[in-house]
Image (cartoon, rainbow, N blue to C red; front, side):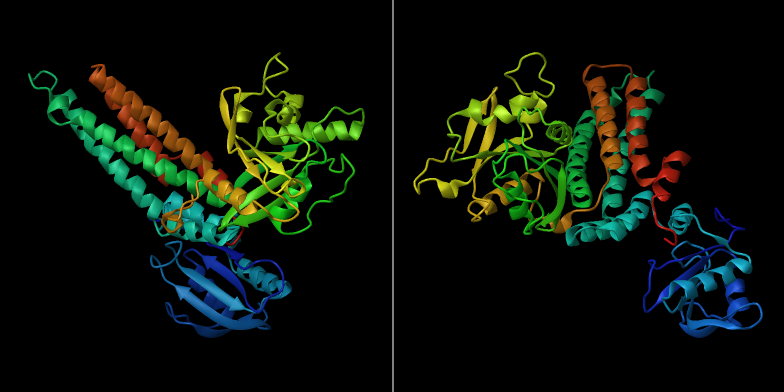
Length: 472
């Protein structure tokens, strides 16, 4: 018995607008019956058949191809019929209305994929990968989503769960034979197995982090004093004149966002208002928004005018950041470590300096080493080195072909699993009660199961599938 045995759904499966081909998808036990009623044609499984789609009074609405996929050999695991006709939206709506008239109901967003999940055709990771594939913003993101859809991520999780299960067997055995004079925990190398599982979990987490970046991109905020060349740097990275550039300080009053792609990795670049004290209400708001953007940044590029600030004057270089004094407490001469750890200094306008100017690779500020980069947004000097740094921060590697797509919820679940595994390892080292260790291991397995959908809640499923488009 399938999860939706008595329900048949339908939807337009192609994107809105005009196109050469449009598809209406029907899934459920009555899909074949409805198809025969509106086409007067018997469809054979996996055989394309020319059909005429007719109204209740036998008027031809459209003609095209009918495809029948018989349960369980279909995407949803149910009977599926796809009617492929012309791509005009009014034609498609007429076909859809006729299908509904014959007994189907309009599908909810993501309901076809949801049925595939409940009917064990795909796991939750693969279901999310379908949405990621549709929404991919770069070629690499699409390839990574396809690898997840093919089960690469799922296989890694299942292998780790199998290892945890094996450990749990030994731990549970230790509980069952607690009256015996045998140290099962030591004899079976449980602690060593836990340590190996922890290493494997760390590797998966690192790969998943890269997968999240491939899906969502790196948030990069360009900050600095007015007229340092922030907007020029944005334009240089984007390759277009996205921001207005003038010699007038304070030209940028708002946060300007531009999407770029480096080596197939999506990046979101934010140009912000110049950091300075101002009596201008609009400029004050711009600085406030810049401060807010800094808090959300994965990387901050602090741009300074190399022809004005000497590279050894670190206090002057950092003055724009000191102006905002984010989370630094009452000390006006400090910057929060949270910001400094995400910051590098970009010396712009090096084309205005003598040919042999000193270039220091880094400097210490508040006990944190800051990286220095020397560029000319105008001539392009040094831009490739800066781009390489952006890729390095994003965790880019030449092994991207092995990566899979991932989401923030997967990272959160992996972190929870890691915390529980750490607790279990600590319990073994400290000779805690075996029941406590067994519970920690059970929680590890539960957190991992939430990733693939083996253990999940209806609320989570509703949130995931509601983000899909209708017809998918």
